[in-house]
Image (cartoon, rainbow, N blue to C red; front, top):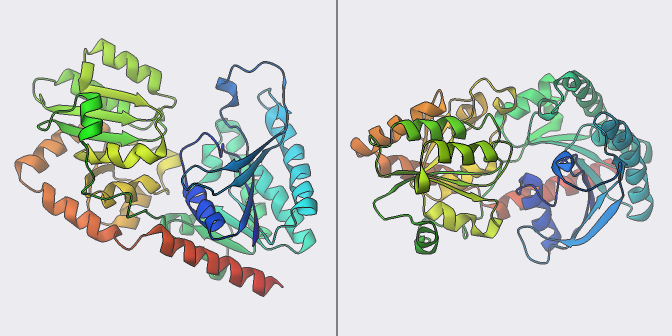
Amino acid sequence: MKILIVQESDWLERNPHQQHHLMERMAIKGHQIRVIDYPIDWPTNNNGGLLYHREVHDNISKIKENANIQVTRPGFIKIKGLNYMSLFFTHKNEIKRQIREFKPDVIIAFGILNSYNASKIAKKYGIPFVYYFIDVLHALIPEKSLQKIGKVFTRKTIENTDLVITINKKLSEFAVSMGSKPDSTILIDAGIDLKDFNPDLDASSIKNEYGIKDNDIVLFFMGWIYEFAGMKELARELGKNKEKYPDFKILIVGDGDAYDELCQIQKDYDLGDKLILTGKQPYTKIPEFLASADFCLLPAYIDEEIMQDIVPIKLYEYLAMKKVVIASHLPGISKEFGYGNGIEYVQKAEEVLEVVKKILDEGRYDEIASSGREYVKNNDWEAITDKFEKTLENLISTKK
C-alpha cells in the first residue's frame, strides 16, 4: 500500500504518538509511507524571515530503524493568524501534488485544516479517506477564538470520511457526537512494545547518572510538559513538605511550556536532586528511565478540556513496566481502564504525595502494579499493527 498521512503537528520533533508507532511498523512491513506535517513550535524557534519554505525530509525513523518515511513540510507565512490562512492553501497544493506524484491508495488524516482539504480532494479522486482521532483536535488549537471554527471543520471533514478510527472509547463517543456514523467508526487501541517495556529491565545506569539511590521513591513523568500537566503544583507541594517525604524524588523526562518554570521552582524551593529535570531524551532510552521509577504520573488539571477524552499512549507503557500509575480522575482514562487495573485516581496534583505514601504504608504496591501489567499484556504493537493493516486493506478493497 501507498499511504499518505496529513497532520498539523510536528512529525520530526514531537514525542512518538499512535501514528508514529503504526506507520513505522507498516513501513517495515513493506508499505510506502509519506507524511505532510507542520512545525507547530515555529513561534519558539529563532529562525529569521517571514516565510517558512517547503522542506522534504527523507529516511525518517523515530522508533524503528530503517522505517524510511518521507516527511514533507509545506511553506507558510510566519505571522500568527496568517500562518493558518497560508497553511490552508499550501497544504492543499501539497496534497494534490502527492496524489499526482505518489498516487496514494489511502489518505489518513490527523489534523483539522489539512484534513478538511484532504477529505474533499480524496472524495474527488475516489481515494479512501480515514479520519484518525487521537485527541479532541479543535481543543488543541492555541488560539481559543479559533477553536469553534476548528470544530466546524472537523464536522465537515467527517462528512467526507469513509472511516473514522479512534484510540479509546471516549474518543469514539466524541466522533459519533460530531457526526460520524457508528458503523463507520472503529476503535484500534494504543499499544506497547512488550519486548522493550520489560519490568525486569536494569535501571542501574539511569540511577547512577541522576544520583537516584535504591531507597528513593521515584515519581516519574514523561512527555510534553503542558501548563496544565500538574507538575508545577506537584513540585511545589514536595518543596513545601521535604521533611515529610524525605526519600521522595520527582523525575521529569521531557520539555515543554512549563519547563522553565519548573527550573525556577527547583531553585526557589531548594529541591536540588529531589526534582530531576532531564529535558528531552531519545525515545529508545524511555524504558530505562521507567525502570528507575516507582510511580508514574498523569496528574493533569481535571477541568482541562483537552484532557477529557484522551488516553495517552504512555499510560500503557507505564502499566507494562509494572508501575503504579497515579492519574487525575479524567473521563477518558476512567472509562478506558476502569478501577482496580493499575491506576489510582486523584482530583489534583497536590494529592499525589499523600496517595503514594498511603499505598506504600498499606503495602498495596505490588498488588496494584501487577494488576496494571495484567490489564495491558495483550496490547502488543505487532498485533495492533496487523489489525490496522487489515482494516486499511478491507477499506481499499470495498472502495474499489
